[in-house]
Structure formats: structure tokens, C-alpha cells
Image (tube, rainbow, N blue to C red; front, side):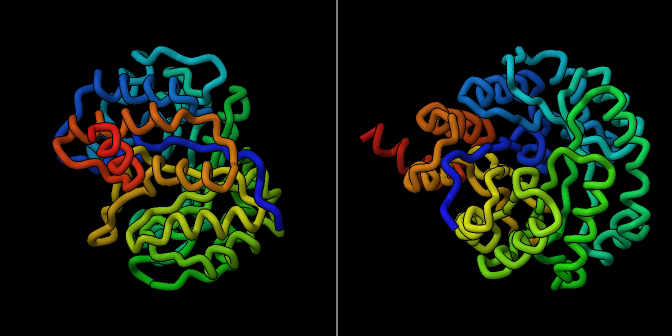
Length: 302
């Protein structure tokens, strides 16, 4: 199959990237990160999370972030919403898209939220209905689609089942997420092919963590199945509390560098992206997590 001419990149650093940071990041820095990413050309930025601050203290200022950002026309600002309380916060914050989530792993679902996959997704029905009634975009994220920290392998049928449940809820987009970064290209191709046999590929996205260094290869495998939406996090920010040694999301700079080499358009300014990665890494007092970003920054400094 020929590769798509253009890919939509969803930048998840402000939410998925920062949520595991131990030290609280000032709201002004979060606002600047969202704004700089939108200005760099991302059509969709995952900006905040409306979850209980008890569970995710880093995201406690979601309302302030959403109120403070300068909105770029045409940009989709997404927020994570686990329940109706979260949805009400998202609605008040004028989010463009709400994100709901469910695991493809029964063990993960039971261990984390003490209910079955089917029950967990049924809980999102009122959120989905409310989002649709409010004219908001709805995205469903399937976690542990390529492997689970508790049960290991996840049946492909389970991933397809969750995708179909999300489709039935009215999701505009469905993320297939390798939450712990254990997937390989062969498995990725198998899962993506199975999902896109039931769901229009134009509505399916790939979300890969780079724990085992397979994320770029998995993105290429997904491109070959007709997927043209991917999530990434500037400077590889993020991690997974369920996987020891997880390095976080695939670095956006590396993804853009690879896509550019494949002749695929993203609309993202690579030089601006490198600057953002170096800036936020400096603020977090660590070296950047993107090889392409670090190499480009070093070349500039030479």
C-alpha cells in the first residue's frame, strides 16, 4: 500500500507528557507550551485533563490552563474527561474535544478501575451523549492495545471490540494506544489491520510509547495499513506508571523528522518544534528526550 501524502499529528505533551512529572509545573509554563505547539502548526493539541486532582495533582490547574491560552483559530484543543464531573469542567472550559478511555485488557480494567471493559465503557455513555449534544468532538482512547503489564498479551479481538464500542458511542476518532510501549511492527500491523477492517482508517489513530525503542517502526507499520493520524509528545515527555523504565511517548521531533524523510506532509514547523523541545526540557532541568531534536540543536550550536 502507498503511504498517505499527509499525516495529522496530535501533540499530547501538555497532558499525557506532563501528567507524570513529580514537581508541579507552573500554570504559565503549561499555557506557553500549549500556545507554542499550536503556533508550530499542530492541528490538535491535548491541552489539559479534568480528572480528580487527588489522582493526578499535576493536572489540577486544567481550568486555568484552558482559560489562559490564546486560541489559534482552527486548532482543536482536547481535554481528558473520565466522568460527567470532568465533562462539565471541559464544557465550562470551552474544550473543542473530549477524550474518553478504556482498556483492551480485562486485567488492566479490573486492576485499575475494578470493573470489566464493557462496564468501563458503559460508564462513558452519558459523557458521550453530553459531548454530542454540546456539539463537541469525541475521541475514544484504547489503552493497552498491544500489551498489558498484568496479563501480557492482549487478544486482537479485544482491541476490535473496544473500537466498535467506542464507534457505537459516537467517537469521531479512536486511538489505538500502546500504553506500555511493548508492541513491535508485526503485531502493530496485525492490530491496526483488524481495527481498520471494522472502523474507517480515517478515524483511527496510533499512540505509541517508546519504552522498547519500537515506536517509529510501529508508526511506519501503521502508515502501511492506511493510518494517517498519530500522537506524539515533544521531547518524548511522559511515561507510564504501570511500566518500569517506560520512557514515555514517542518524541514528536523524531516522528516529524521521519515523516519528512518519507515525503509526508504534517504542517508542523520542525525548527520551531526543536526549539520547544529544548525549551521545555530545560525548564524541567533535563536533557531533551528526542534524538532528532538533540542532534539538530547540537548542529546549530556547533
